[in-house]
Amino acid sequence: MFLLAALGIAEAAPPDAPDEQRVAITLADPACSTEKSTQCLCVGTPGTAAPQLGEIGVDLNALKTGGVPCVPGDFDKDGQPDYAFPGKDYSCNQSVPVRVVFTKNGKVREVLALPRDVSCLQLYAPRPRKGPHGEPKTARQGLVDWGEGNATWVYLFNGKKWAATTHPSESR
Image (cartoon, rainbow, N blue to C red; front, side, top):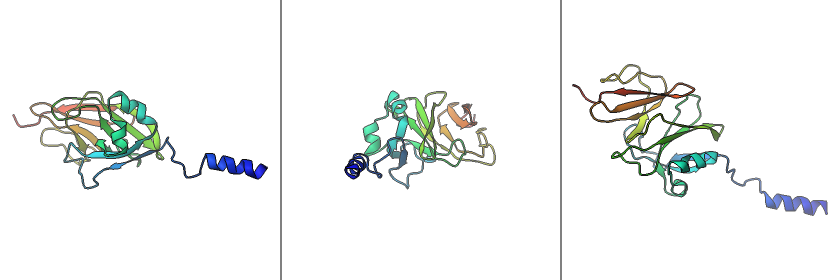
């Protein structure tokens, strides 16, 4: 009888059942460059970050099936993947809120908002010197919202919060 009870437990929770706590996200098209494109899509599951992403209108069903806009990176430079998700109606024609999912060992460590809404989100790659319009040099990946006029914003995570700086987008 004990053996039957043990088998019943094993059937109820198979060892290979998906862990809903885990973050499993990849680029839908691995060739999409988040440094050059504002429309790369990610597909997968956000683990326990689902409620925070839902708050800004990220379509969680589309994330699981076809993909939603996102920018993967390692924004806190801890060797673990992180993901920036713009909110509902994301396009370069209007600003939307962004939530960044920081992970540790495949699970959500924390979810933070960028300090302002963005319109054209891309990866800001590490660079050894300042950019042509004063964009910061950095050893870590960040996010950038390239704009026109004085509208380029660079976001770098300092380990505790996002620092945002604005820069001209063209020569004066």
